[in-house]
Length: 391
Image 1 (cartoon, rainbow, N blue to C red):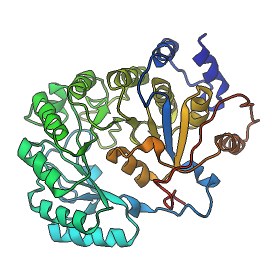
Image 2: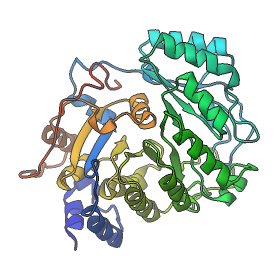
Image 3: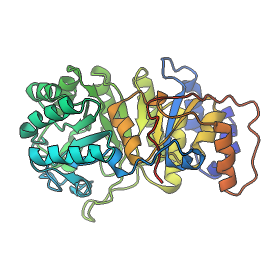
Image 4: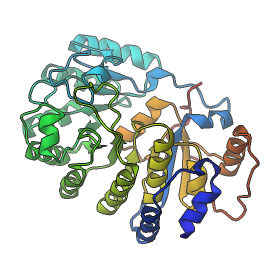
């Protein structure tokens, strides 16, 4: 048995997790060869650490990083994994005037930034044209207020208009399979259209933080490795990986749960392909035992950030001698750090990891183990001073 498998056996919440031994062995070998500034560093964005925070950490509430849709719940594409339902809980701003009023209201309530998105037309374009002057006004009036935009597909002219509007980060899904584009997205565009969009955005001064949705083709991994090749040709500022959660898929086009071993292998290949940029595991991924396996693979593959990790992940990372950081956060702060490609590995507050692990074990009402000799890195950070976690 490899050293890492022995370590996994020491982490109580991972008992019976069913990790693939061959994959863990390969991850152990490849992790030792990782190079670059970010090799070994991992930051956990988690609300569970609120129990260890103090009165100096204020509650962030839903207003810290609101999601705003310029089309409300409307979207022409009706993709099979979403059916536009993801837009429904977002704050609507169907006119530029409504966006201006909404931003002023949210900033008054403590918002630090926002995600702006909207439903697509039939060409997978979000029609922002009328909004660019208002976005520029927001950034000129509130320069510290950060704006991340879901771009959908763009040409060079639109990419420049986004840059001129002052947004801080551009987001897009990178899809490497024509079948997925046609069948899941119902879209008459090509893989090349997605690569061109990435190329145009990367050529601007914007922070570019694309997403790869693992298992997007009805739960199967189909174009993910091709998407990685596109990202190697047009390297972004950070990459967010999520695992498909098709809550709204119909019985006519059902999704299967992605194979967690394949997901873990993709994590490992993504880390090798993009060694110099932050790789982050976003909030969206299956729950339960699958989440424990997926998160374990993310830690062992060398990803730099996990939003809301499964139980035992901090201990696993510490035992593997990762450079562990913790950001007590609610969903909105975690999402903000992900999409903005803020140097998330350095954000957060000082946390006594030994104490956290001990209290997590007490919370599980199990005997505490020994962590003697395990190196733990903590550091005082300033990025979220005065920010905080949910109550």
